[in-house]
Image (cartoon, rainbow over all chains, first blue to last red; front, side, top):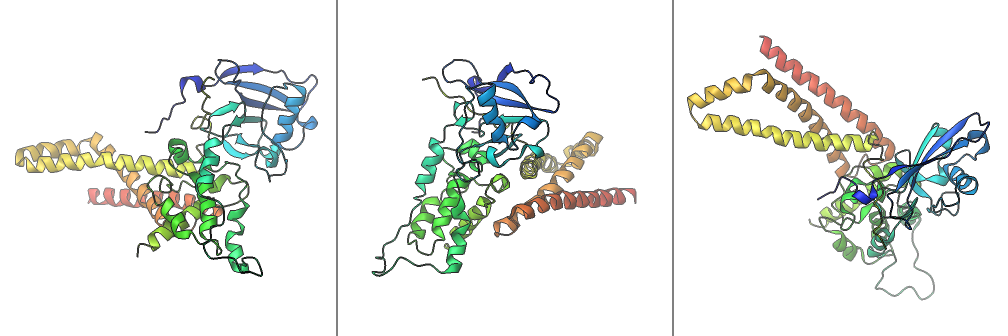
Length: 260
Length: 129
C-alpha cells in the first residue's frame, strides 16, 4: 500500500535564513532542502538570497555561488554543466530538471530546490540512486546475441534501424523521469520505472539484439512493467526530450502482439 | 548509521501539471463512480423488497441531497469517460508526444464539460416537459 505521508524523520523543518547581500537591488530567494547525515535532526529548508545581476543564468550557477560564498557545506552533484552527464537532476519549483540547463529567468524570484522526489537522501540534494541503477542493470542493457558476428566486419545496421534506437539511446540516466512518476514513488521496489523501461525498449528494438523474446518475458509482470498508468510525467520532464511513456506503450503493444 | 530520510514527493511536486492533474482527476472520478454504484444497489434492493420499500426508496432518491449526488456523478461520469478514451488512444501507441498529450489534456477537459452541459440540459429539459 502506498505511503502518502513522509516518515517522521523525513519531514522538513524551517532552517537557517541567510540575509540578502547588503546593497542588493534585484534579488532571488532560494529555499533549499538540507539534510546533514551526521546529525540526528530532521531535514530543514534553508533560505538564501542572491543578487540577480551577480549570479550566472542557470540554477546550477546559483547553487555553486551559494556553496562558494554563503555556505560551503551545501552538497549537490554536478559535473558537465551542459546537460550531458545527468548529475545535477533535482526538483526545482516542483518539477524535476537538470539544474545546469534550467534558466532562472523562467522561474521567477522565488526558487525552491529539493532532491529528486521519494528517494533516500544521502545529504542535502544528493539522493541515493542505488536502486535506480540496479533496475537499469536488471534490464541487461547490453547487446545479447547467439549468432557469431561476421568474420570480416562488425554487426551492421541499416540507417532506419539505427534511427529507431537513436533517441532512446540518448538517455543520460539522470533519473528525472523515474522520480517524477507517482507509480514509481509507490512501487519503486517492484516497478522498474520509466528510465529502466526506456533502456529495455532500446535493446528490444535493436535490430542486432537477439534476446528480444527473453527481454519481453522478463518484463511481462504486473509490477515490473504494468505499474505504468500513462501518467506521462516521465515524458513531461525528460531534459533530453526523450519519450519513456511511448517506449512503455510500445512494449505493452509488443507483449499483446505476441499473444496472437 | 541512522536511516536516510525520504525526500519530499507529493508535498513538493507541482500537482497542477497537466499530466498529474488529468491523471488524479481520472482516479478520483473513477472512485466516485464506484461509490456511486451503491445508490444503484440501494435502488435494486428496494425493488426486490416489494412495493412498499420501493416507494420509500423513491422518496429518498428524489430528495434534493440525492439530486446533488446525481449531478456530481454526471460530472464524474463525463470526465472519466472522456479521459478513458484518451487512455484508449494512448494504448494504441498514438498521441504520446509531449505536445500531443498537452493538447489532449485540454481537449479532455473541454469535451467532458460539453458532454456534462449536454446531459444536464437534457435532464432539465425532460424534467420541465
